[in-house]
Image (cartoon, rainbow, N blue to C red):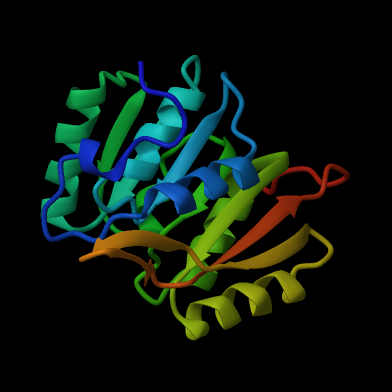
Length: 200
């Protein structure tokens, strides 16, 4: 069984963007996934994050939500390749695709399709007290939306944000040069333990 930080090349990939290894590791650390956790991966893409989460929550369950048909197919292929039977693919668009899922201990948002606030509202209903939601933001607009949401829900969530820039060395002739990976902002919200989940 693979451990945390699977090599990028190990995943079956298509034209769907995939979260790189170093970002996946940091996201898992921020999510604090335990073996029995139920985890949502919203905008799961190729399923690389879902697989990592399923390996950590080996006695729990991961729900990978993806609206893109190619992404759904890739998640299924990677689920089979890595043998993670505790991973369910949910084909559909969030937040609607989240409504019939059970409460979760952690949630990861890799893609929101411009509906981040609505997705976070639904996650807030499903997320257990003390649980964490981790948002990977590529654009400044997504970062701003995430921060605005948590600022507007300070009675429910505490939050933090970090900016990550990864450079990988590649050989160019006789030299090693840094090749940059797009910088990512990782925003983490933790649901306050003094609150009870809302029911709908």
